[in-house]
Image (cartoon, rainbow, N blue to C red; front, side, top):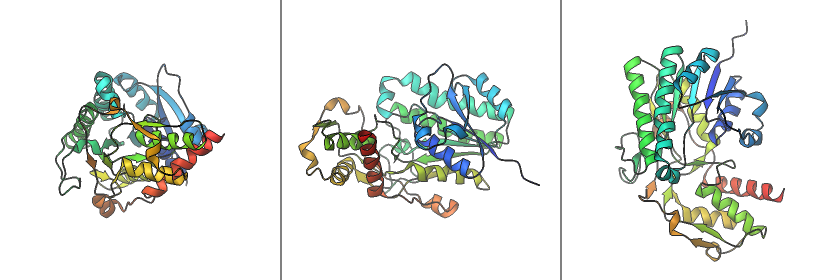
Length: 327
């Protein structure tokens, strides 16, 4: 007798992580549903890029409307729910704190309430962030024992969501897991993010489509991984026998300056300083200087480790942007 397929719902499926997660789940023979916003004109370019658009069943709803979420859960009764929906650009969170709060904080509360009332046996993953730590660390490293100290409206909203997931786990015995995801990138990262801004800008300069790249602070240091690796960690968290919270990171740290050097070197552009200019408008009211995660708990408990290292990630993104622009 053939077992029924597992069913998963992915919110935020049209962003960066959603298409990678959908591809992984489809490879594991899941029935995958993707939540897209009601009244929007959806952009399927990311799911098209990974070739999964036709294999996902899209449902319309609103993260800020609890009733619409309940309707969706009654319709599909998922086994697993992956919440990737967010206003995830840190810079915008100062300009739009209300919208960021409604989606990143209240949206998670509504989602958890809907699961509890309609399908309390569903396993829930919350995409959290290394930004929760701010500049706090232990000997420069951030793991699950480091106290949180968010330094942006974005990080504050994510802190609310983190603790709400923990609260539902402890209060209602629900399977809720937080993935404290450090910076992770890919060829489908939004172009407003500095990594993609660099790889696209370098490719444009190489092809003669631009002669400069304008950035803000390039001394910030980040632990950068590959989104395709990080979605595997999300899945592993929901397969474990008990729910818990995990830092997902590479354990390596690099500056934006190093990212620039690696991208420009890939295209044999010589000294990147000839092309890069700085504009203080890209600076933030409060800076997080270093985010450097320890993935030891995920490695020991889940058997997870990143496969794509820093240089390979930058090369992947640069090569992809070159191919796009040439086309």
